[in-house]
Structures are given as structure tokens and as C-alpha cells.
Image 1 (cartoon, rainbow, N blue to C red):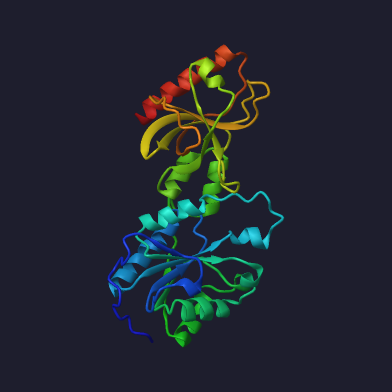
Image 2: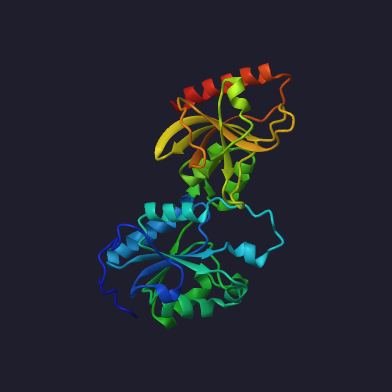
Length: 323
């Protein structure tokens, strides 16, 4: 078995280092590694990452997260055009950085890669590529062709290949194991409170501010129209939400509508937010909203005056909830 020689101080790199191939890696012998898609980096993932960082720091070696681009389902099931993810690559990287991970290895996920057996994966990535001293797995993580690699099937192979194996148990919230699928279902139902409970933070959505019909101005409530940058990012259920809004690094409160705008003929789908106490021109800039409270479903009103009255009430409720 390999020695855990303290060749690295804990958290060697204050900023997460990202690599996109095994050939580009610096020396990482003895590192502690884990692997997965980590969509959303929810509380269950965070438990794995905390365990990973703790184990790496205790051994004085780097912590390494192996993930994949594109998402495996886009390669294995290309006909599933409705795939929606909880995090973009940039959001995932930011979450790994916040967790204190030293190295992110993003491996290209191809059909050839998907055909590797779990033994090939271990030999090529864990042993030859990383020279890992320990491999950490979530309790239900499976990998390799036909998902035959797991903690149970890997125990004998780990001993033969000379690395330690560690299993992280499920993270429980309200007596239920946290999972990305549960968060997706909650968001699709507009239940942002449950999503926040499982994520450990409000669900974020980023996009570019574009010009709309500017009808909000005529109603007295100007909005920022947000074009969602990532086509695979999951959108919460249509409706009205109280959100945090981050613009140029500053936080504001906002009342956001996402949906078909049934009261306004011809407008169609949009995602737009009225930012409280804000009036700057930010066209072309990226903004991030975080869904804090679901206020109401989207509705068709009898007149623009009725819509204006409801928006006034939505803004007042948002102010009371977030400020």
C-alpha cells in the first residue's frame, strides 16, 4: 500500500485548479479523490466533499474531484432533449471552490469513455492518472460500463491496486436522503423551499439582460428581461417568486415572473425581474437570481390595471420577505 507522503500542504492552491485531461495534471501522487456528476452540489454532495477535504488535509495531500463534460446522459441518451440540470459548469466549479477542493479534473465524456469497465476506469484514472492514495465514494455512486462499479465491487480491486477506499453515507434531511432528482421535482412544482432545504442555498439562475417590450415601464414596474444562457439549465415552475438578484457583485431583492405572460397578447414566454430600488442600465450584462420564495402561480388578469395592482402587491410582499 502506498505511503501518504505529505508532499503537499493542505489546500495547496487557494484557488481551485481545473484540468481537462489526465495528461495535463501536475504530480498528485497520494491524493484523495472522488468522482461523479455532482449536479447541483447539494447537501449530499457537500457531505462527500467535506469528507474528501478532511481526509486529504489529514494526510497532507491534495483533494481531487473528477467530473465530466458533457453530462453523461447527453451522450448516452441523446434522444432525451428534455434534459435539465441543476448547475452549469461554472456554477459547479464555484461550488467546488467554496467547498475547499484543490483540483477539479473534468474528463471528456464520450461513447468510448462510457464503454470502459469499472476496472479500466480505476486502472487508467485512479491508479495511473492520479496515483491516488484514497478513493472516496458516495453510498450510491456507480460508474463504469453498465454502472457496475460501486463501493461493494471495488473493495477487492482497491486492495489489489494499493489504494484505500472510503464510503460516505447518505445525507439525510427530514429523514429523506438528498438527491438531485428530488430537487428537480421540487423546482418543477415551484417548491423552492424544499429545493433550498436540500441544496443548502436558494436555487440560482443566471442569464444575460436583453431588451424586451418594455411594458413594465408603462405599468410603473420596470423589469430586467433575462435570456437564460444555458439551454440545459432547469427552470422552476412558471409563476412569481421573491428572489435575490446579484448584479455586478451587489445583492438586491427582486420580484420575478417566469412564464407565458397570458395577460399580454403576443408577448410569449419570458423571465423578467423587477429589482427593488434599482434603476441602472445593465443591458448585455450577466445577472444571477436566486429563488427564495414562491409567491403565486402565473395568472391571466382581466385588464392591465388588474395586472398592475397584482404586481404592486407582489413587490410589497417581496419587500416584506427579503428586506
